[in-house]
Structures are given as structure tokens and as C-alpha cells.
Image 1 (tube, rainbow, N blue to C red):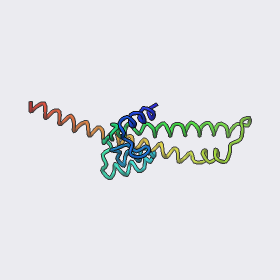
Image 2 (image 1 turned 45 degrees about the vertical axis):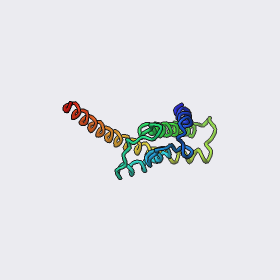
Image 3 (image 1 turned 60 degrees about the vertical axis):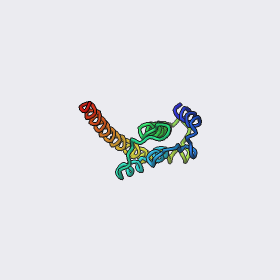
Image 4 (image 1 turned 90 degrees about the vertical axis):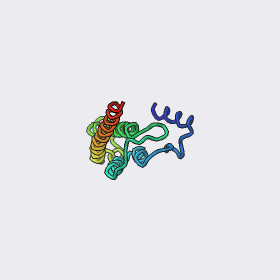
Length: 143
């Protein structure tokens, strides 16, 4: 998987400075590794550039996939638990499982935050693309 390939690359390059932290990681990288989307939004609003990459070449768009997968797995688990809770045939839910179902609204809020962050991230990348195109155009005109 992606994390195994990343770990192999990091080992070859000697780029881990701590477990799960690569050389050149920004606060944005660290927030995404912790799935702290609210923190990512605060960082962008404070002017942190999400386009910066670490020594592995990872930017925010590379790490957001893991957040999406995590939320997807948790959502599927909650849906299965809700189905089990309605069933008269299946085993009753444990206390921990009931809590997961009860906190579904928090999961939905995280999805909304992820969507909001993704839109902002797309806008930032669109602005970067326009800047690059402008530089390329000026270089072309100068040649």
C-alpha cells in the first residue's frame, strides 16, 4: 500500500526524523497525519502554503487521501452498527459500539470539514497554477 511504499522510500532516503514525521514536514503535514482538519483550516487561514512538499515529495493533497480513507472506514462501520442495532436476529451492540453510533453526528461534521478543506485546497492550487502559467507566459514572451 501507500504507507508501505512511503516507509520504504523514507528508509532508503533516511528521511524520518521521528516516527511518521519526515524531513521537511510542515505543520500542515503534521495536522493531516493526525487527521486534524480543523487545524488544517486554521493553518490555511493563517497563510500557511499547503503546496509545500517534504523530502518525500508529499504535499497536502498526497496526505488528504489517508484522511478520506479513515473517515470512509469509520462511516461504513457506523452504518453496519446501525443495521445491527435495528436487527432482532443479530447480536446486540456493545457499549463501545453504541457510542460509535451515538457520535455519528461528529463523523458527519468531520466529513463536512474535509469537504470544506478540499474546496479551499483546490482553490489554493488553482491560484498556484495561474501564477505558474503567468510565469511561463512571461518567459515565452521574453524568448
